[in-house]
Length: 210
Image (tube, rainbow, N blue to C red; front, side, top):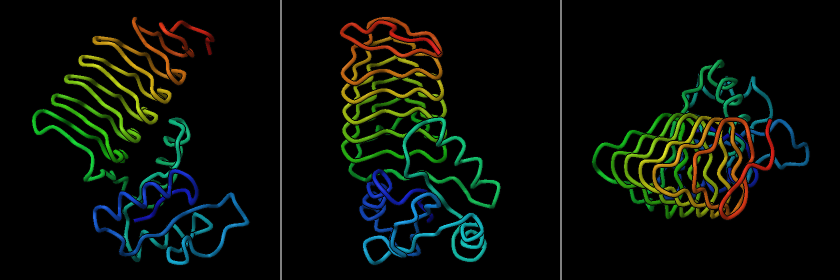
């Protein structure tokens, strides 16, 4: 598998692959940082351009995942690497607790250690569910939603595409959050949030429109 990114969150993706005993032919990709070594942790090669990635997909393994946050950037990287033959692949920690009934998880999701997902949950393509999040029953996350560590989403919620929910934020039951929304760390969402805004506070209020 090719992990896009070679810093920060990409290293956490590596740990999930280790937990799943999937370390053969792992490589990283970083075409921005010129000061990186040839190998991460003296073991995993770092590819430096899209031609190397395309060759890897053709000759070794066509799977890739995105080890970078930011919903809009993740969408652009998904499109870029899919065009050269990559297959967007989920990485799910075996130390996440996921219910057995009615759940749907899209391609390319990253679901990290300590997460709890109950039943009847739909998670769209490219979502990032970070450490120790909880997602209640009958909740829908649309494409490329990012939940930061410790987010608690109650039952019957809906989060629109490209929204980013900050660390330790709480969504009360039956809340709808629009697309392209930023929820500040620690916010408590007590009522629906429209598209294209930033909210913060306890209870959260709109601080900025885009």
